Amino acid sequence: MDKYYPIMVNIQNKRCIVIGGGKVALRKTKTLLKYGAKVTLVSPEIDEEIKKLFHKNKIEIIKRNYEYGDLEGATLAYIATDNEQVNELVLKESNSKNILVNCAKNPEDSDFIIPSSIKKGPLSISISTEGKSPMLAKKIKEDLELIFKDEYETFIEELGKIRKMAIDNIDDIKVRRELFKELVYGSLLDDFMDNDIDDLEDEMRRIYMKYKMGSNTKTHRKR
Ligand SMILES: C[C@@]1(CC(=O)O)C2=NC(=C\c3[nH]c(c(CCC(=O)O)c3CC(=O)O)Cc3[nH]c(c(CC(=O)O)c3CCC(=O)O)/C=C3\N/C(=C\2)[C@@H](CCC(=O)O)[C@]3(C)CC(=O)O)/[C@H]1CCC(=O)O
Ligand SMILES: NC(=O)c1ccc[n+]([C@@H]2O[C@H](COP(=O)([O-])OP(=O)(O)OC[C@H]3O[C@@H](n4cnc5c(N)ncnc54)[C@H](O)[C@@H]3O)[C@@H](O)[C@H]2O)c1
View 1 (cartoon, helix red, strand yellow):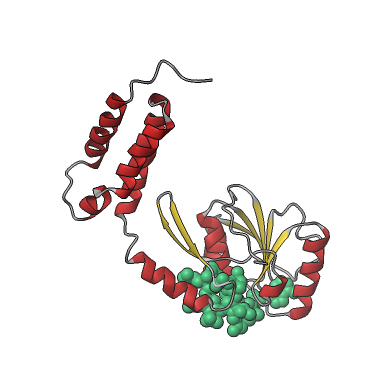
View 2 (spheres, rainbow, N blue to C red):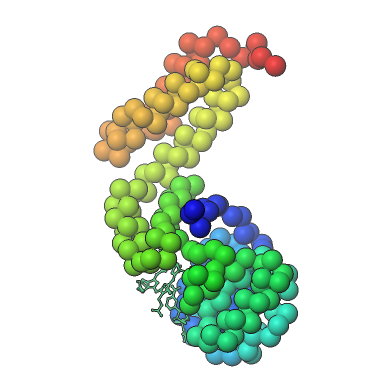
């Protein structure tokens, strides 16, 4: 049975606790901030980059050793210390409180692991090797970045607009599917990437109108 179930989690404004203040803690913290989490970090020693985040009011810091109870109120917990005994104690607390935990040192103790990921506007591509080789996950990300370029962001934003219009105005799901098929599987994206399209929005709307006109729907929505 596969162990890790991939999901997209909204962590905006959720409290996430990082135990440890070194390089790994910094990397995890930066990712959490990118996704709008409220980060509290507990560690006696703090990396210089982490201090900068604190001075910019991006995170809270508790400058001491971890103590039982520090995970109170956490949605997610991250263990990034170099001390096995501390890690054990944090694991005990997270397990007893059902707080999902990531342990950088011992992935087998983790409830979740962090994939390498590409973000282009609404597009997310995550790569995981289930901890077998984080470096390979990073390389695959770099390879995929050559394919999934910035144009994808605009393309997906425009697709989102047309899809909403189609759901509101074209009742027949078969017609909608045909429309989406032409937009997604047709040559539109390639043409856009090759700079062969002046105005993507116009072009998508032209295709949309073709399907809308062909589907004399709108008024007889089936219940
Ligand atoms: C993807 C990424 C996300 C992130 O952390 O933000 C991430 N590691 C990254 C990079 C990276 N990490 C390491 C190297 C050095 C080379 C190497 O060892 O390969 C490099 C490469 C580099 O830095 O160039 C060392 C390392 N990593 C782990 C251990 C412990 C162990 O394996 O026992 C050790 C050994 C420590 C030691 O030797 O002491 C464990 C984990 N690292 C994971 C994620 C999870 C599984 C991901 C997957 O499913 O593949 C997992 C299981 C748990 C977790 O941390 O969530 C990020 C890429 C960022 C990017 O994409 O740019
Ligand atoms: N998952 C990954 O991607 C990855 C990558 C490299 C290393 N690691 C592993 O993660 C661990 C951390 O790596 P690092 O490079 O950040 O180490 P580091 O030495 O830079 O940092 C360790 C941090 O732990 C803190 N710490 C020690 N005792 C503590 C306690 N009682 N309470 C709270 N904090 C405490 C220290 O103050 C320090 O800030 C190491 O064990 C390493 O093997 C994981």
